[in-house]
Image (cartoon, rainbow, N blue to C red; front, side, top):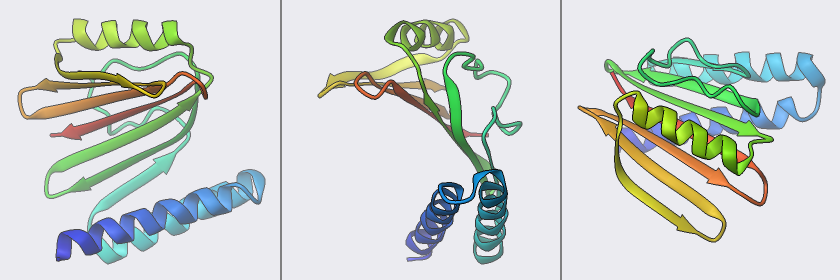
Length: 149
């Protein structure tokens, strides 16, 4: 039950970030990020950061995606486990393919690879660490999610 409550709090904080970011430029975005981070940290006892750049919390073993534009990044650390999610726009299919090759070159192993309805999804593992890369060809959006230590 506690796990569901933490998830609900985190999702609410993320929604606050996106809602305020859409209606106030940089001031609204900064305020939303601070409010969302503080609310979620207070309620969950976890450490959370949000930004629109490659997060410091992303381990060095994960190659940095240098193409496209970062819309948002969120890093949450709970109980020694880190979850990082980064959303991009303006990513071409070639950028996605190049990044997937970089991930494999970094030592991550493909666990699942699927394509459905214009969404390419690849899930990788490296020991106890997991990395997911999802690309939407119509919108040219990419989401990278890392979970691990």
